[in-house]
Amino acid sequence: MLRTLAAACLSAALAMPAAAQDAEARPKNIIVMIADGAGYNMLAATRYWHGRALTADGPAWEKAAMATYALRRDIEPLGLSQNPETVYDSGKNWDAAPVTGASACADGYDAGYAGYEWNRCSAPDSAGTMSAMMTGIRTYNGAINVDGRAEPAKSLAETAKAAGWKVGTLSSVPFTHATVAAGGGAHNRDRDNYHEIASEMLSSETLDFIAGGGNPDYDGDGKVRGENADERYRWISEADWTALKSGESAWTLVEDRDAVRDLASAPQTGRLILLPRVASTLQVERTPVGGDGGDPRLQAPGDTPPIETVPTLAELAAAALSQLEGGDGMFLQIEGGAVDWAMHGNFLGRAIEEYNGFNEAVDLVEAWVDDPDNGSTWDNTLVVVTADHDHLLFGPGNAPFEPIENRGVGKLPGHKWWSGSHSNQLVPFFIRGAGADRVIAEADQIDSARVNGETVGRGRYLTQPELGEALIGLVSD
Image 1 (cartoon, rainbow, N blue to C red):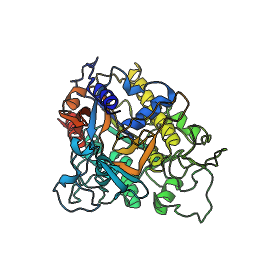
Image 2 (cartoon, helix red, strand yellow):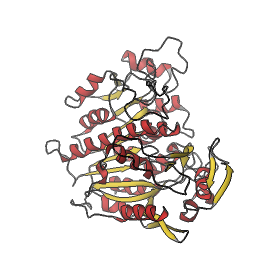
Image 3 (cartoon, rainbow, N blue to C red):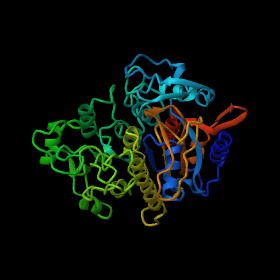
Image 4 (cartoon, rainbow, N blue to C red):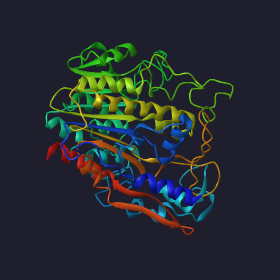
């Protein structure tokens, strides 16, 4: 089992194809695409279900792994010191020593192995990880573009805006959630301060385009809420929502799916915010139906029909590209945030749905760069496809680090969840286009360990602050 995993991990991570384009060129467009929570086994599950490779598996994309560890797990600003217990360590990650009893860091799950337990107990969150990718500074869990003392750190979005670029951020989860907010240049000491984050995103001069969930007027099935619905204004304050709805804001609000689709071919002037008619996520929270009792842990992709009134992530991305292209430059963050939401519930079927939707957005971006009519080429555009962190998902048995089991196209892969939350494992990293060589050169560490006499590991990897520093340098140098 370990030998099989080692071969798969190392061969994939060390396959570093030469870029067909001039990857040393400085980009005028940077697109960062984050599949929240999607580690190696999540990608494998999606490939097996569909029976085909993912877009970024293609030979034009360079590949490595990326470390996601936090400055510390404490959700408060305690200084700049690195907690050594959270630092990624191949030996700790791949430790196959059995651990009996329940996990100390994941209620309701067996401990399993020392590596599993270390991953659960040192796991990062989406706020700190995305902030590291956007600022080049590692920070604590819960932080949005601030350092370990909660001092604001200049983000890639702000750097791009200062360079005269247009800037956008979008997601399949609420637009004020951790990853999409950090990608949009917000700053906050606590990711849960959603009203403060929304106000900053709407009032600052950084953003030209916002899209995501969080519409107060609709529930998770895309139906109109009652007047006294609980948590109606969780993601945005009533005052900010009223301003958007009344037209008193500097932003133009778009809610209708057809209107979102129209933006792909007919961009508008001014700043746009797209909040589809759904509560939090585009699709993950829709009520399950079916003969399995409606248990989303048992459902396969598509068992519950999608909400047809809600645009896809790719449709939001098409609107963003149309709105932002054609100027002096563009930075766009695209998050498949609901992959993570499905994985928290151990809903593999819905996680595959969400990763597939994310992959469709990658398809769209690749086609946009290839389109000769919009001025973008792989010589002036850089695209990153990665994740902010991993989840503890393995194969269906109890062997350590067992790979996801391929049970054929259209069948849920054999799997087992070892947590309802994050892990500290490395995540896949793909990059293509102008400046790719400068970024991939940071992948100079090697993930490798000996387990029961066999070599395992993901091969070469970079860290999230290294990615952030490199991207900012490509804009500002």
